[in-house]
Amino acid sequence: MAETVSIVGAGRVGRTLGRCLRELGWQVGAVLTRRVATSRAAARAIGAGTPQVALSPGVLAADVVLLTTPDGELRRTAERLAQQARERCRGAIILHTSGALDRSPLAALARMGAWTGSLHPMQTFSGRADPDFQGVIFAVEGERRAQQAARRIARALGGVPIRVGGESKPAYHAAGALVSGHALALVEAATEILLRVGFTRKRALEALLPLMRQMLDNFEELGPQASWTGPIARGDYAIVQKHADALRRYPREFEESYAALALLGGRVLSKTPARTIRQIKRALKNPSGGWS
Image 1 (cartoon, one colour):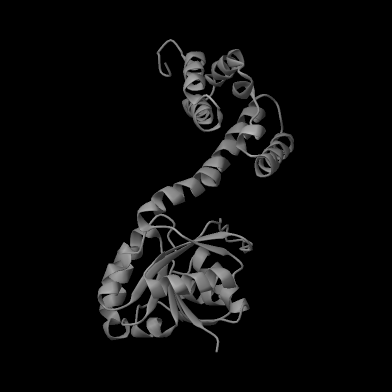
Image 2 (cartoon, rainbow, N blue to C red):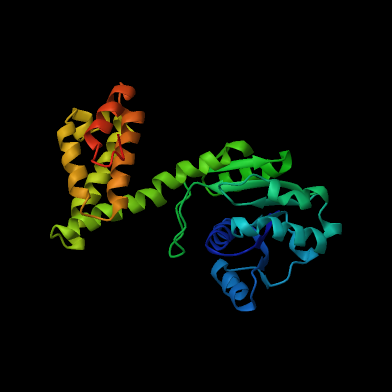
């Protein structure tokens, strides 16, 4: 018998998970957003489900309830659902999809007898195309039955469920942010530098994207230290100073980010981090002493 899922807060993540689960044979129950138009649009995007705008006991009729609201709304949503569906909470399985939070925002539901936890795919959601979950890590956390349900969902989607303790979720999520959101800012900053020196955006991307892809291939195949290239890896600190001097003509975040990343590279990639960091700081030192 197919399992059923209700989705509360059907934005990018909720719509994507709902659609993917429906394609795998899951039944979709309530699809809830704040407005009638958006809940109907979400149900259409999922291809199933009953649009709703009010939290009601019917939301908990599903085998699993996914709360995919923004992090800041999770606690309030859980408290309202606990008030509205008090009699239906016992035995319900309720998972949120925050990467940084543990199950504690769902405490009001847990007090009513629900099994609570979290399920977070380490993946980006553009809203334009469904991500490929094959082989993707899903952080799983929560009470026993909630974890079991989260693992079933992750495996059904082709992902790999990994238990991440609640106290570790902020660090886990920060790791993902470093290589998704922050790496995106890094690529755009490099693109803007090349634009200023005369590249078109098309040519800038042609220069940078193969470089990044090769770096990632090397990292996967050879490991971090064997893949490390550039002036710090060679010990050419005069070039590091030239880089810093050149970036002073750009908004200050460019130079500061270069300096921070140089020091981070020295810490995590050098075989002699303390010595490398000293040399980087010496190379980056400026008249104001900002990096001395």
